[in-house]
Image (cartoon, rainbow, N blue to C red; front, top):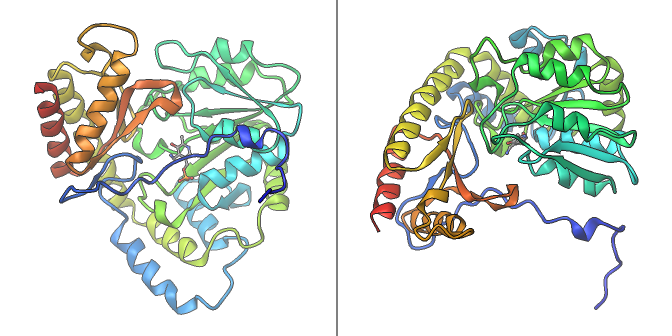
Length: 371
Ligand code: PMP
């Protein structure tokens, strides 16, 4: 049976594979593969979600008004510039659809989030990856790859999967070097985990310039990934564009209601951030003691290299060591992510989980290394 061919380039896209939730044969499941908030959602968000069932026969508020107001209050922003979406993935896709098309280029940093090239290819634009220096976005390399066809520059800050970040000064320098026709999308999915004076999620750049957008998510510190909820902070003209291209009721009512309760529970978010700080430091120290190279992270995951665990030192051995470690952990019910799709096949990315989960993963890695 033959099927109609999709538009040229679509079949070049490798599908995004995420949300792995099976470890056949294991008697427990520890999910450290998707950077989900370790403590789960705020109890107030769960309660609100359950209460939302009473209104399931109603369409949601198409403008996500209460949620935008709640976000504006919490983060000190202008609600009129906030656009909500079904995960920040949707917003990245909508921005690409609205600003890029066939013949255009979408620029990102080499170890950037996979949805950037996927979103570009889905609209027929060319994804262009600028090289990094030391697993960190390189401002000069990014600027050197801007052409008159570049329509969007995506930069995750902090970046997934490297956990590195651009300082506020570096981000400002990146913006200053861009022509005005390029939309700079600062993907700040992990911003809530960061508490450093030299970091900004980028909201002040959005308010200052007409070509900067910041995207955020409820899937990480708010731990509501299952509800698919994200938001973008935009210059008014870009907010207007997103309102034209988004679906009329893109954010479901349960997500809106739970989202409002989640942002109001600031004590829970603070506790989640503290938990993350403690256990990221602990996990980094333990894995380093085991002789692994852990890339410094300011997010809720660490990137662990197995390049030095290759034995023979042959190129590619680190990849095999990482794959063997991933399988060893999976057989014990622990799911982590090998980063081949990001050009880092010798690395595993491990999310920060609960204390019990962190102790379990370190014990399992130690057992793997012992052979
Ligand atoms: N941006 C980055 C950098 C991410 O790591 C992720 C989640 N993996 C997303 C965006 C997408 O998040 P959401 O669940 O909001 O679609």
